[in-house]
Length: 598
Image (cartoon, rainbow, N blue to C red; front, side, top):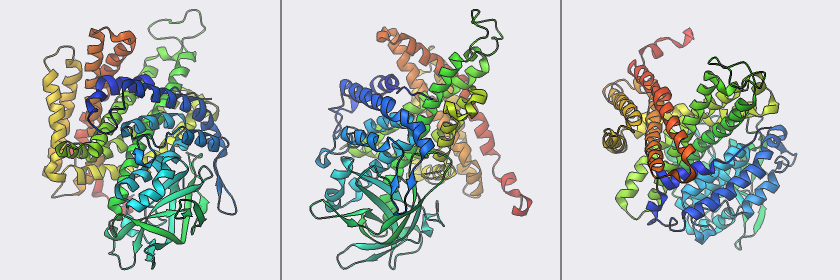
């Protein structure tokens, strides 16, 4: 039976010491986000994750969700009670404005909480995660009447939310969507169509489910420019906020899938269901992108979370499992064999996962803070810079952290040997659960194409230029510091390689677009390595400062940070050179064979 320990200390280290959350005190919500409040929230969220959600992770995997003849769905044993605790604890509304019943705290707090929930139970965490994305879309694009109707109950956790994009014949290419919306005399619309792969689409956790649905109005332009976003509740809502009759949306089936069994992934059939426009007609994709970007950051957090819990269990096993003797000499003479953590190859796997996890957590929280600036600052220049950062980093976070999430869970499983393949230890579930993260909310190949094809050149390359300058300035600032050279020198080399790759695309991709497609995934991972390396440089600098000042009881953790950061720079970051080499080969051999030759 796997275990989970919420990484509370590491989150506090990042927010308090590395990113200095107190510097954001001028933003709405941050004045109440003192280090004491942060610690209290983390402790409570960690306790809920460890004691309530983690024990249900295996239950959810074994039982799955069940659809009944009337179209209703029941979640696994214990999920409904756990969700009630979650809602009663006010967790859904931590970052929602107070006017809708939330606590108005920074969005960064919700991101950090979601890592803890996901580490304990990915399938469960998706129910509130999709709701938070729906809340964000309604906050940004809903009319005052829609906000008043739906947000208080969603914030309280009484109602949950979903996003409905995919149809049987279209996934990535949303312009092929066929769901239609017919306008009614009262201004509402009748929605008809089928949506598939809808996470949390039908369940028994909440009294209502608020679906956000892309559909095409009559006479709308073809393609993606003709899509409109609608709010379609499972139960209609009366003028006084009470629930009315059942709307014309039913769960046709739930998917039988590889992992995340505890989440109800539904096929939803809309049969003249009543819906109301969110935002503007024919601009639904713009409104939906608010939710999609929230979801993509949320999936990146899932990649980190699954990697973290797999790592923790691999460490525990490596310390206990006795097999063989160390090649450098016996380490446990009182035992028949040494624990496998003494073996260099086991250390290679553990150190790689540890180095990636800690840097990934930093990258997630750094970006979450940028999102708070983009949404809350009254400084237009600061908002623009933060929004640029979000646009540039979102595909990197989603693609790199979820690719790493699967790779790392497989490495953690490998440490268990044959026992990792057996369900009893829980590692095979982590591998199965991690696989979907590379696919949903935009497959990772699409994230890479988005980065190379859209984000690099946006606004004349303003975002990538700012990123290059920030990292380059940091390297120059600390290059003369002997203690920092092991961190900034490799980072500078990797940054130069990323700049070379960017220039290569500028010179070779416009005249031959396949060159961009052929190198996009390597570019995304090269970018990810540089971003993670930048995080390690900052963490190393902070650890050095804390050790100089006495470390306040965290001396061993800070020393471990420095060693782990060195490992990243020496053993992980050099992969940047291989990514650059592959990018520069272009698309010729990749595209040379005719389809018949495969």
